[in-house]
Amino acid sequence: MNATEISIAMIAEDILAKEFTRVVNHYYPSVGELLQNCHVKVITCFWGRPARRLQYIGIYCADEMLPQVQSQKDVLREIADNMGLVQVVCMNADRLLRDPLSTLKQNNPRLWLELNWVAAS
Image (cartoon, rainbow, N blue to C red; front, side):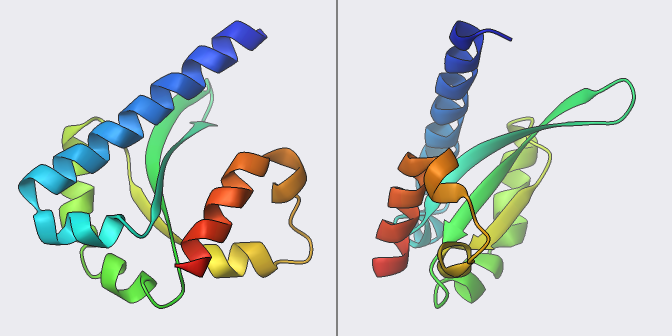
């Protein structure tokens, strides 16, 4: 994969994440309000032999928001399934930022900044 292909894939993931958020806001406004304080990202991984491309939704939340978002996981999974995404995973942004072994700041500074915003709100 060259730089152009990687760039296009990242743009497509961003568009898919925005579309997921738009659908949640449209059909489940109360759940959409929860997602306003979270960072929603489409994550692509490859699994199996031969490698199969799988995409899932990662929702990064502050520690105090995590139980509320996880209580709506069935709704979020239903929407993700209808969009062709495999799963919905909720992650604690506070814990990721405090991890001393994390290389997130060096590898993905934009995500690191957005997680700082999520943790602060």
